[in-house]
Image (cartoon, rainbow, N blue to C red):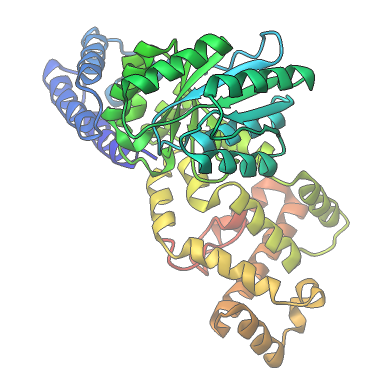
Length: 465
């Protein structure tokens, strides 16, 4: 996410870090590089001007603590101004209104609006413990109605049926009555998108807004459109009283122009980030965490929250009890660790949120590591329960059967067994001597690609270096 911008800014800040002091000359030089990084990231020009002016004013004002080096001081200023540009703090949804709380979604066709409705419905049901109903008022694209119905079933929320022969206003009135009658906490309305902004579209969506008087009017926009995202958001903001923005396809956006521009241009906060196709791929937007991630400083809080939500606590407790009783760490447990990491978005997603690991995250995504994690899981799945519990019973004929069943080579299976043995050793050290010995064990695990494997436990596959 935002790799290009992150790389350019990190490079600039490293150059400043080598200076003995913050002088007018080196500040101007650094700001030239910052300005170029922002423009290349497709950040709107007014945002670039305001941002660099604010950084210059604070840096020239010698806002420098004696505890900080010049590089650290400049980094702190840039981080603070990035956070200001993105929005001071997380802006939660207004769910305090009388139920059903109405959330209306607006945006152009292709921005991922219908998928975002499902993601938001899932978020509200699982994290906010709300009963949710969704409805599609997109009568121009019958497939959108069917798509939302399918997604509603997938995320476990109520779907109010609609038809392309109906008028959008009639659809939302019917849905509102149904939501009231069934005592729903939230009603999310998916409105029609167009390939471009036009007068009839804005008139229709304005009528829907008057009919519903929603608590939240969220504009859904594709982050990959860069500066155009901010311009489109401005047009919608002039037609509707927007309360927030949802940026989609952020995981594929290397530039970050939309994220840095849309808040400044619309004056409304970014509330969520869409991070992929899956219905779980929606993150609340935290400006401080994103600013930290852009500057390569990681995002530990998001990583912790993600772990709390996505790690299977039952399996984790089962493993802890097993280890406490002195029973070994078998290949079933190893497979569980691989699956837990996959649930966390994979190796690249985890590394991106760790301080100083953004570059390694990109390498992990591009390397053979991701493929080999899937390969390891396939190998373990091809074993019998007895073989998973006791890998030492794997003789030549069993190995041939397993590799044939998983479509892998003998060396792949042998590497897996080696990595599993390394993890077993580490687990024993952790049981006997706690965290200090565990870290020593990790440090000594060169073998199969180096330290820090699945779930932070074990050697990485070759190819991730």
